[in-house]
Image (cartoon, rainbow, N blue to C red; front, side, top):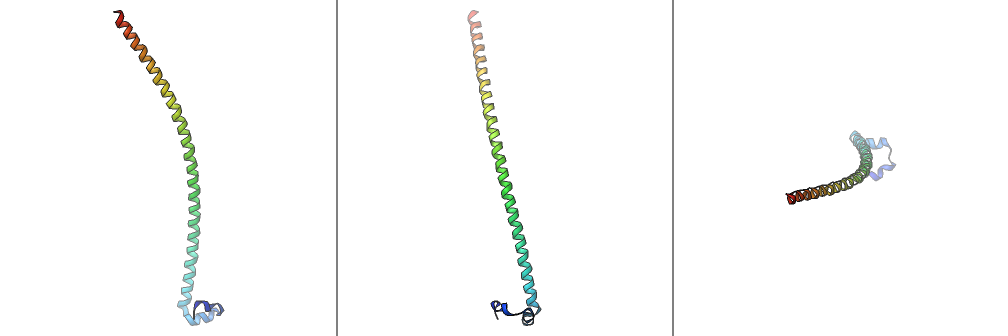
Length: 104
């Protein structure tokens, strides 16, 4: 008798034909299947939660990157101004030294 033929047979005839081992095998299969479904559902929920967290982190990184680039541009401009001022000061110092040397 195949499993497809069991649809018309009641539980008591299955118990008498397959015995307690058959019933235990069916129960074990049922519990294994239900446990598999629970674990699978939990894994799917965890995966979706990880995807959401990853998207949040990517958005936060993008915001931080924008802020960092704005700060870098601002500091680059400030450094350019400092270099320009330093160059002017060195030029003035060189002129002063040159003028002093030419006078003496």
